Image: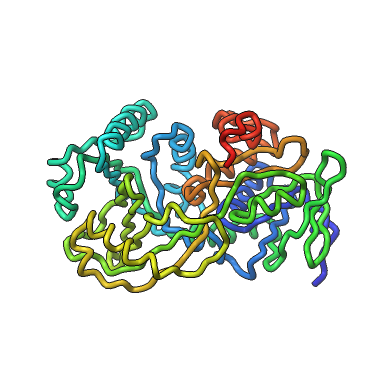
Length: 387
């Protein structure tokens, strides 16, 4: 395969062709169509990483002001995706229901509702009796209440990924599948390029969008990145008989249990109770966890006792100690941009991340968020955050 000199020394090298990497490429090219961008992806085809294993959740009900802001910045991108990029993504604002089974969680939800109101996010507070009236399939004696946001939505992760890939390719970005970044080349405090098995690419702007492998990649440049990979299992099941079509995303904040109903309402995605697993890259299905999971599911939606367990798959979630992303230039290393550690929210916050990273690379600043909240040096300033 012939590689041109422009490909060997592009303006910007992005490592990772998942939703974060492609969103960054898209927003860079939207701002400056003349940029030469090369994207390296270790997998042999699109969608084999974390994005392809996602559940497609888009939500606004966060206690963190930062995460709410990232959702708000991303909102119009998802709403306009089909018309702007001419790609169907099954986008549906079916709402989201956050459930509180303990007093401390219920109090926190009420505070989040007040903050969301100030941000212009519609959230309705539902006490126990209202909750059971609107959602009678929930366990009658478990919940003190919940909040409902009609903006919470679903979109097909692979369709969004494929749409972005198609657009950035049309705009001139070069994507190399099966090219794993083995080593970041530095000279002093400046990025010089990246080594792959297929050869070396030179450039003084490199973006680490390597998902679960972000810390390993950063380490080759001498950067300590507090991001760890965790396995998460998703159970594909038949829809409970008393759960109607277009049911909102359900999330029990006490256990982490969630229910995502596919657009057809013929199948649901369940998961979320395996939050406390050891870090690692194994993507095997651990069937020993199934019994505890389904017992938890029945304690939330009793009719799950009769659902059919169709299949299970595993994805890898990249997590930071404070569950907020890392976005910004690596401390002490010019040209090495980090976009990592989205803690399960990478899909929904990819549009905001793309805009922010494009601002930082092209203008050296952004007015979209307070970058101190996401900058990698926050862990150096407060080492108690690093586990």
